[in-house]
Length: 397
Ligand SMILES: [Zn+2]
Image 1: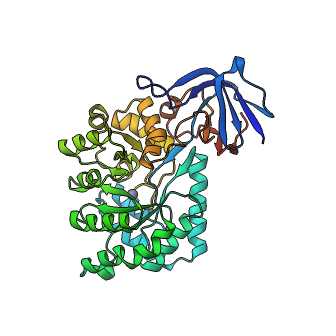
Image 2: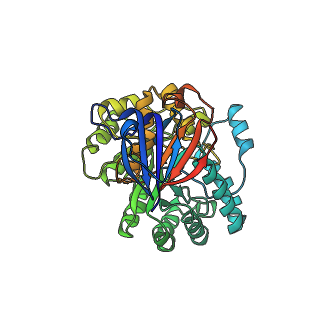
Image 3: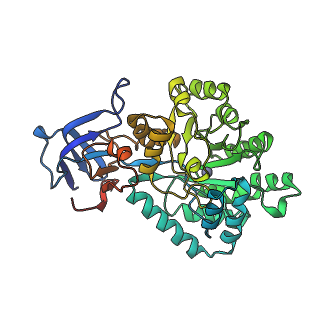
């Protein structure tokens, strides 16, 4: 048993405050880590002794970010597609096919090293919990190896065989849905916690999505939905109806969608609206109406949507800055969405907030307050990261 006192924290953001102050900021604070958990939080003046002492020199400390939406198992490069889009072409779901071809040709070690590189980026940017989806294999074997490799890096593995219909099934979509809900699900479910479906134009319709989600639930998986990214549609209402943990994107919402998400916030199994502003940034699209969701009382999370086509960022601080600048979220709302919001979207109680007995997942900034995350866009302010009590990033301050 070893203990570490992190002393002289100028601003401790717990994300565990009362309803009228959920950010729960404390000044002149200290934290004691015991093994993997937080053992003590309080004013530094009365902090207990510990085996080791780290001086935060007045810096801000927050919960590690929880990135609940990332596509990291892939091969290939789509930089030219990005450049073409910035030169005026529009984004459609079909671009995924480019990555599918490259992923199928890659060997396991190539895929594994790409995931390892992106995971290192995520952690370096302060994310201590992250979800990883499959979805670029789209054969039984390629999807299974995708979730297997994802599972080497996180317990939050999502089977996304229903990302798009691969070209070889273009003329028999029903046969592909049968495969996804049959042999592919059987092969992937043992390695996955979640099932996801891209319910949108150019991907899967409401009936197909319902089949995928229902089969996933029967296999014991939790539900997530790519919903309403490209146009208004049935994704969000389906997610709420089936008590999915998260409806992701939420870019084109009807008033009914907003009401449904807000109503679900009070349920035992709520559906979180997970906003992915990196996708709108990288496809030069209109941002989701975060204010409508927050003002209606919906639960909101922020995630990177890291993927090679439409949002190739691993930086939660960048997404926080976008949420504040482009989606009119307050800095406090954006930080909460990137921490406890993401944890709720993954139905996790042990991460996303700093509390005694919780996992010691923390980020120390090279800045005096959390506001700098949005105030200093594009600057890596992450000076220290602890995962389950272990310091994995430690920049000299
Ligand atoms: Zn996605």
